[in-house]
Image (cartoon, rainbow, N blue to C red; front, side):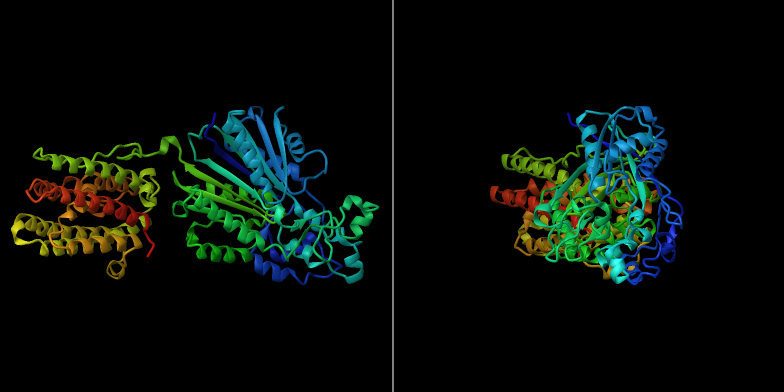
Length: 626
C-alpha cells in the first residue's frame, strides 16, 4: 500500500534573540584574548547577518539540543492542534547530540514527553534532517503509521566557545586556531525544526504534499570533509580516533575533538549536487520549468554563484525570484536548516495551491546529496471552482462531411491527433498553472506577450498561402484571404488585453519569438510558400480547434483566478462565442468536402496537423525562452 503523505504543520525553535555579526565574539569569546583575524573575511563570504546561539555572554549553554528539538515539536503540534498522545512515530536528526549514548531520538522522545511510540535516530551533518524526513515519510506512505513527527536540532555554538580551546596545542604554541576550525566559528548557528507528517492534507490551511525524497552518498569516492573526532595526516588521510588517544585530555590537547572542514575538498559538493540535480531531470522526476520555489541549503553565499554557473552550463536557468533562503537572517543551522526554511516559506511567503517546491540539501561531511519535491496543497474550503479541471475531456472540433471514405478517414485521423494534442497541452508548465490555479498576473502577461509574436505572423502566413493557391481553386483561396483578415483582428485584441493587464506597449513591438514560436512560424511560412498549400488545413484544424474548444476555458479560468475584467481576457474568451470562429470551421469543412481532397492530400493534411500540434505545444512550453 502506498499512501500520499503531507506536511501539515511545521514548528521551529530559535534560542534567544538574533545575534548580529559584531556581537558574535561576545558570546563565543576571544581566542587567546584576541579578536579573530578570519572573522570579517568569512562573514563577508558567507553573507550571514544574524544568527541564534543557545549561549549567554559568559559562554554558558542555555539549552540542550534535545530540548530545542522538543520545543520545535511542541510548536509544530500546536499549529495543527494535534495532541502529543496521538503521535505514532518520531524520527530525529542532529550532527552532534547532547550525549554520545543513548541515541538522539531517545533523548528527544524523553524531553518532548511523547507517548510510547516508534523512534529512529539519524546522525550525519546537514543531510541528517533529510534522512529523518524520509524515514517518517516512508512510515506514513507505507501505512505502518498514520502520522509521524520528524525533527532536527543543532547546537554547534558550544563547540566553539573560546575556553574550550585554551589547553590545545595550537593555542599554546601559536596563539590561534587552525583555519579548518576557526572559520567554522563564523558559519554555524543553533536552532531546531519539526514537521508533522500525516496521510491526509489539512482542511483549513495549507499543506505540503511530499512527492518524493532522494538521497545519495558519495562517501566511497572521498575522504571525510567535515568531521570531528580525529586529525588528518599531512597527506589528507584519516588519523586515529579521539577514543584511541591515551586520554580524553590528550585528544583535546591535540584538537582531535574540534569540528573541522577540509577546505581542500569542500568545493566538490557543488559539482556533486548539480550532477544529482541533472540526473533527476534525466530520470523524469522533475522539470526545472515547473518549479515555483527552490530551497537550496547552502552554508555560505560563496557557494551560490558556482551552483548557478554549473546549472547555466547545463542549460538550466532558475530565476532569482524562485530561490528562497533565510541563511542571512537565521544562519546555517545544519540538519535543521530545511525545516526552518520551509517554516518561513509556508507561513510567511504566501504559497499558492499547486506550486512546486524543490528542496536541495547537500552535505560535505563525506559528501551526500539529497532532494525533496513538495506540492503546495491549499485549504479545501478556499479552493475556487474553475471552469476546467485536469480530468476534463475536451472533445475534438466537430466536422461535417459528405460521407466520402477519404473524408471520413481524414476526420478520424484528425480526431486522434487532437486527443494527443490536448493531452500534451496540459503538461506545458504555463498551462498546468492555469489548471491548478497558480498562474500569476505576471505569468499571464508573459503568456500574452509570447503568443502575440506568433499571432502577428498568423495573418501573414495565411496571406502567403492564399497567394500560392491557383485560380482553379478560387473558393479555397477566398477562404484563406478571409481567414487572414480575422487573424489580423486577433492580434489587435491580444495587444489590448496585454496593455490592460499592465503590460508595456513598447515590449509588444520590441519583443521576440520564443524558441517554440520560431519553430512554429518557420514551419508555417515554409509550408505556405509551396504551390497550392492545402496541407495547411491541418494547421488550421489544430489552431482554430484550440480557439474553439480550449482557449475560452483558459480565459475564463484566468479571469476568475486573477479577478480580471473582460477586456483583459477577451483574446481567449471571444473564440468561444465568436461567429468568425464558426466561419473558420465552415471554411475548413468546405475545403475538405471539395473535389480537391485526394488520398495523398489527406495524408499531407494529417501530417501537418501532427507537426503543428507538436510545435504549438513547444511554443507554450518555451514561454520566456528566447
